[in-house]
Amino acid sequence: MNVKNNIEANRLTFWEELYLPEIARGLGLTLRRMFKPKMTRQYPEERWEPTGSYRGRPVLVEEDGTERCVACGLCSRVCPALAIEVQAADTELNKERFPVKFEINMLRCIYCGFCEEVCPEEAIVMSKDYELVFASQEEAIMDKPRLLTPVAVLQDRLEFLRQYR
Ligand code: SF4
Ligand code: SF4
Image 1 (cartoon, rainbow, N blue to C red):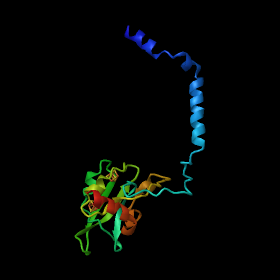
Image 2 (cartoon, rainbow, N blue to C red):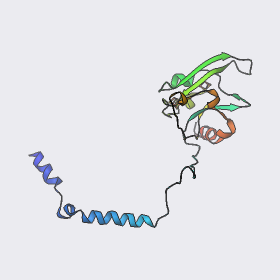
Image 3 (cartoon, protein in one colour):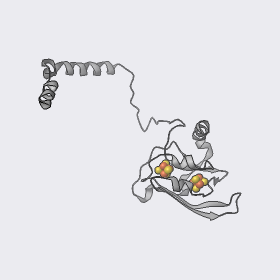
Image 4 (tube, protein in one colour):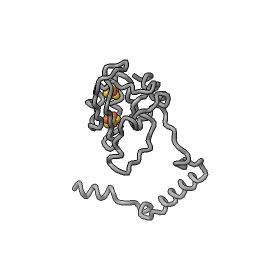
């Protein structure tokens, strides 16, 4: 009985069976859109500049020629995708330890931002970089030199984090 009622309810009306009103409606919509300003961006000539709230590729903050990171390993432990590998070593600099090895596997990263959230030193932040192309799996593993980004480039994101923390 229910099946029969459903069939009755889903039956098309005369006008719906003709399809012509819907085609006319579609053409009308296209016509209206034709005279509105274009929304298409001519990428890569016209690049999109994200705001500070954007979560792109995670990077290591570089300040005074060195990384802020103290190799505590919190980011690595919190990462749900197990994308971060940190190896610590002692240092003579003004901190106890530094990351002798720091890698992020960008094939695993899901851009959740947990690493950034948990870091006690504001040493790892989500950058504005969204242009990620890799020719091999090895190329997608970002080592420390590729992760280090000058603090001046990351000001937008750092200010955004301070505002909402
Ligand atoms: S953004 Fe998320 S998935 Fe990517 S490295 Fe950080 S914690 Fe891991
Ligand atoms: S980036 Fe931050 S959380 Fe990760 S090891 Fe370095 S100091 Fe610790």
